Image (cartoon, rainbow, N blue to C red; front, side, top):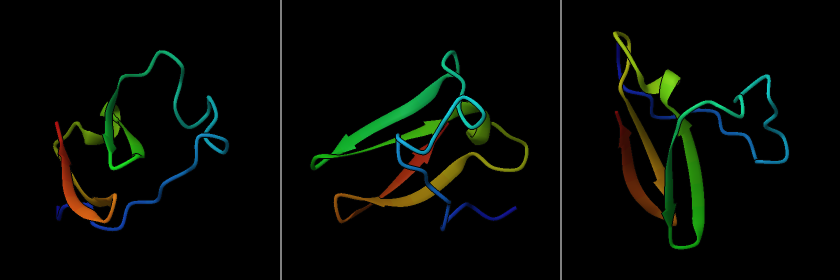
Length: 64
């Protein structure tokens, strides 16, 4: 399965407990004043373990 390169993201205001539960683990990243939280259950695999993204104008790879 190819890496995720165009993942859908929700703002904190739009993400609710049906998307990410309060007790769920996330990989958090802050870069140049921008933040992302990648739910670990979506990075654990056999299908995928990497999300290619851009944060603060720079390419990043979130992996678990």
